[in-house]
Image (cartoon, rainbow, N blue to C red):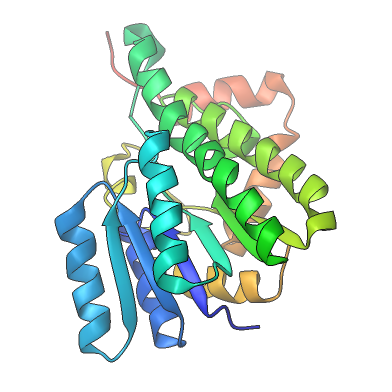
Length: 255
């Protein structure tokens, strides 16, 4: 099915920008949200120049007031909200030898509470209109605690479990909740990674896979296949193997 009216949070770059262009090219009207107003304005202008329809609004997903204002704005300009893709996310390369709880909190505020803030306002809206789909972007990194990525892995695990609970509970209101779990996608975030990233794909390819998976209403959209298989193997590795393998693969700073 095609979703006519779509919100994309975290639409200024990477997967979010690619999703905006992908949905616009397939006839959706969009509201684009990001902390970077100039970047989403540029994306919206590109879509408009190609004959599409895109609105934009600055929104920091960690600020619940801005989220509420963004949902209300989207309802005003779109009428109904058929699909919301919650793509905003951050990752901070970190090693526990220099652990800062403030960085840990910052990651959770975006990757977990950013989703929670939207659900607070999307659920009553979609219940009232009688339908809706919410797609939250988590990660295949949710299966284990990888060295150098503790806050990212923990936040994505929390996001995946939260979205799963929402999927189970909200179905009775005709609200579909989909968990999107990418592997490595070439973005500004992954460019900071200091380790090998197998099966790295481009954001445009990721956007097509995500759109098709959402249209098929899959409960989980996960890709690419190679990384999915690797994550399943890693998930069930005994600690006796996992721990030393991670120490070798992600050695981190010397001090």
